[in-house]
Length: 249
Image 1 (cartoon, helix red, strand yellow):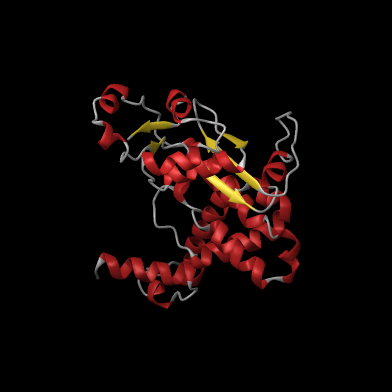
Image 2: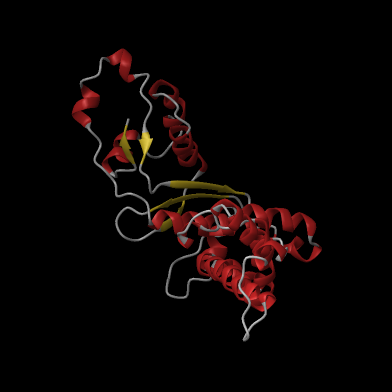
């Protein structure tokens, strides 16, 4: 039998609860039935993925409670088999799963912000593993002809991400960080800058104009196109380059 056939049999048994094909590949044992042995694989696989979600989304788990989070995680795992051997990569679309469930389940109506909290937690998780920042090559940029410079697009550091949320997810997340003491600024609409300038991941509330500038850079707007955003932003390009938020062009 081909490896692909074995993998498909395994996936059906674990995620679709269709164990027949996999059971046919398992040798009989006097201690355990084939059904029991498939159950071990199923429990270990699903349990491992649920644990990965708990580790990555602790605030979401706190918001809904451990038992209910287990139900949400179970639902997500059944629909989203792991595609990577590294469990640190599992959970990328958990916020999308939550957004769908919020629309479907009345008990989640008061937690409409939950999917955005999950998005924040996932970005923070990924940011920790981002590449280190590099210095901007000012000499190479200065060597460009003026007409070429106006058409340049800039590249943000790998660890820089943005979130635009209609909910106060900054306050929600920080209220569950017992080891952190800071002044909470209550706002309804949140623009967040997530980054890891050195070793620690940070989430910072920024104003709409600064967010718009960073989003325009992320969307590959040219230097000439950025002028309208720079006119409103409290931060200029020189500062972004100095802080290594912009790392190349």
